[in-house]
Length: 149
Image 1 (cartoon, helix red, strand yellow):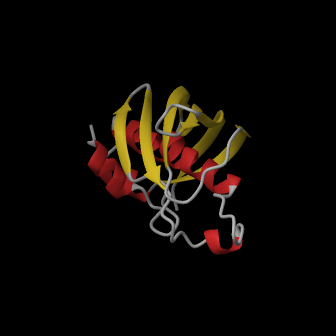
Image 2: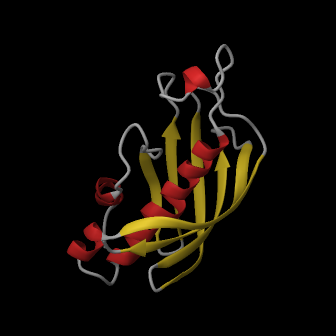
């Protein structure tokens, strides 16, 4: 069984495209991760000048990095050798997410993911993205599949 720090170390995405700073919960039923959108993120100068807003696709990526990548690494490591886990890359297979609110530079978001199913390296999760006061930013379902090179 991997710890949250070990799972974070195995997530292949890195800055500037990693959108999970910490994992607060990680178990067989789901995961909770947080990310703070730094004011110097590469996309803010163009999205939008004078009124920076986090792109919706980036919010979805944050949800996927906790809900299918981190959780998938954890679940795969429960019954596979670490070497196989390290070689596996998780690719998005489906996403149905509704956005409800904008996220601005400096805001922290929390992704709560609950496993729908896990079989043959395919993971589907229900995900909810909130800000610290509990206000919902987005919610939906994401799925991905672990593949070997």
